[in-house]
Length: 166
Image 1 (cartoon, rainbow, N blue to C red):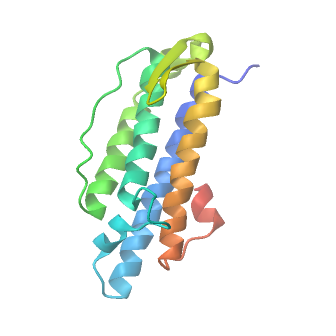
Image 2 (image 1 turned 90 degrees about the vertical axis):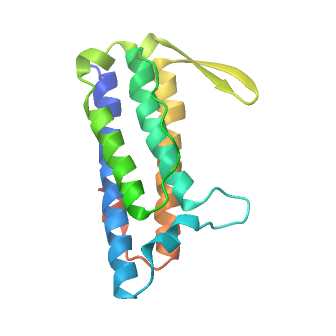
């Protein structure tokens, strides 16, 4: 039996986003235990030229919602990037989980050959649905999730491999 596009996307995205929610809970607990404002995490960066913590989560969420929308042939919903607190980021992840969870196998399966066209800074990029999922979305989600994880670890939040894997 072939792997379905739905089973290769929705459960994987859901697991990663759910793990990210748990990391934010641990970050909140870490801040409370040390008596500092958990919103201090929002501007974290490992280097001056990298996007901050908040943007890492926004991009991971945008990748997930864009994936299921494009694979199903729907317009990608536009969400404001206005999260200003850890609670706002949790709400964004939950909203993304709800959106991604609304796609059944009937919406996504068979999209492996669907043409996905993205407008990038360098111009238009075309993918098959399968290549879009395997070589663009999943690496991007993992990159931004890993960066979020690394920023929290760097800030002293006690996270381990099990936390990353969900």
